[in-house]
Length: 165
Length: 133
Image 1 (cartoon, each protein chain N blue to C red):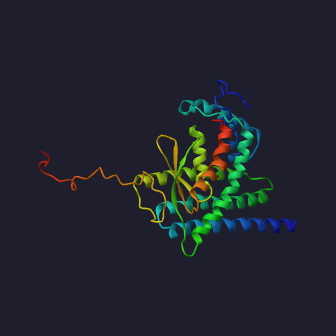
Image 2: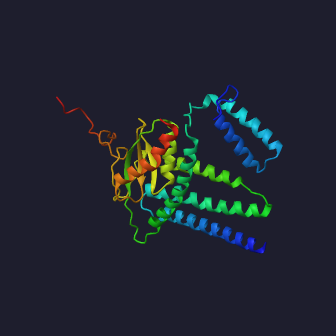
Image 3: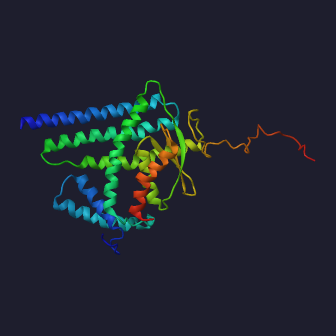
């Protein structure tokens, strides 16, 4: 992990910007590297005052595992949602679920809320102002307690490990 | 060489068709679902996979055509995965704020949707002098 320095306040953001630039240019010529590197250093310096303090990612390799898990779940989610939509009788068991959050970092909560929206049958609808309850709308659910446990085991626990908060 | 092209053609066609079917189902969800919150599920999830499939087909096609990997489409996918949940969240947040009607089968009664009876409009309030002593 690169340590933040004075001229490089957010190393991760800089690396990300460089990758995005190279993808955007669709090439790895020297010129693209130079301009991309320049932007990757200048943009974080200019935008630094706007940023909230970001939590340190303690375990990047868990992040990779999490990414692929979510990717797989997105496919499953789509098949399940398609099943509900195409059901000829229009059967669905929607519900509002209040999910108590254990995460505290804003960024980690954002990740969890986005994951919930992208995965099976759930859309995160509202984060209460106190930041401890996430309101989730579920398209088709049998056992609400079971679903909460599923979210906790599959997504919240790994996120907690990644950010260690 | 011919075999490779045929194979790639099959893969590209598969992703294109799968993507369009998912996009179709997602839009169908808009029409078939009963209330706003249920309608939100279609576009926020299914369209993501629909567009994802089409972009995969695009990556395969242009990689084959240009003879090198074309990864620009990956960016679109990443941005889509970041923005789709946020917009869905904001939509449902504003729906909750407006207290939009929900399907009667919906379980759970969040406080955001409960009507508070304390606030009455001017027309509903009795006018004139107070009856209290």
